Length: 126
Image 1 (tube, helix red, strand yellow):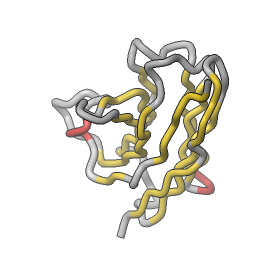
Image 2 (tube, one colour):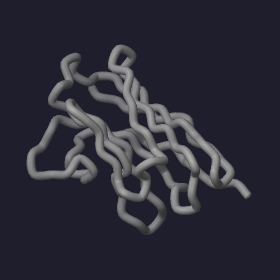
Image 3 (cartoon, helix red, strand yellow):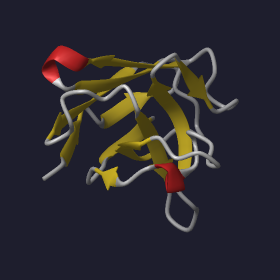
Image 4 (cartoon, rainbow, N blue to C red):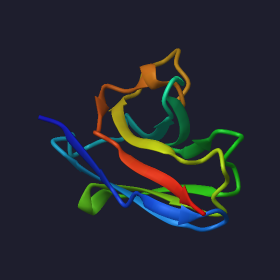
């Protein structure tokens, strides 16, 4: 049974930094054909992909390029999202996702992913 558990959310001042973590369990040991990603969602809006990592590279939404960095520690089944220079549009519920590669979908499309965490909230403090 696949389980993804996010942590690291919190309240950050505009311009600040935060590191989100996702602990994965139950995924196949060999995941060369898997993609993992981070999505975010605010009330009333559709969930949007912000970053993905997969064999051969990573991808970012234009809105976060140069500020967000996705990384993983395969040995410990961890996925990370480093958020720098937090902007007013960044606060949201952030979700970790994983799934086998599906041709026809962007890695930033939620339809690419089978498994989802419960989310961790990022807010901006005044």
